[in-house]
Image 1 (cartoon, rainbow, N blue to C red):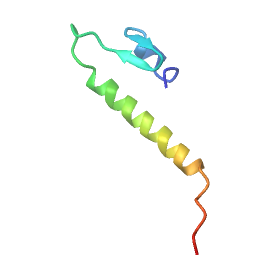
Image 2 (cartoon, rainbow, N blue to C red; image 1 turned 60 degrees about the horizontal axis):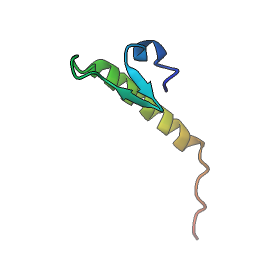
Image 3 (cartoon, one colour; image 1 turned 90 degrees about the horizontal axis):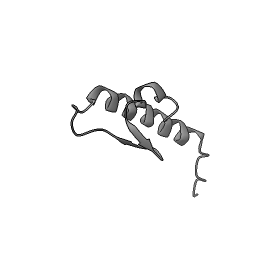
Image 4 (tube, rainbow, N blue to C red; image 1 turned 45 degrees about the horizontal axis):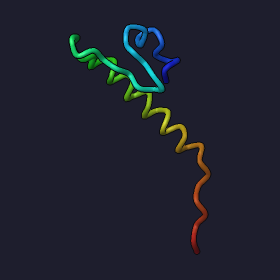
Length: 57
């Protein structure tokens, strides 16, 4: 995810996937929304890739 948002994260401190937004600036709500949507798509993609559990008969 960090690579996907590299330009946007350039102005923030990023360490091991943690993004630190400065308290002296307004919260970047639109950026956080885009990060959440990106993350949700990644999780959904992983869920689709998982094999279905065996059916109990």
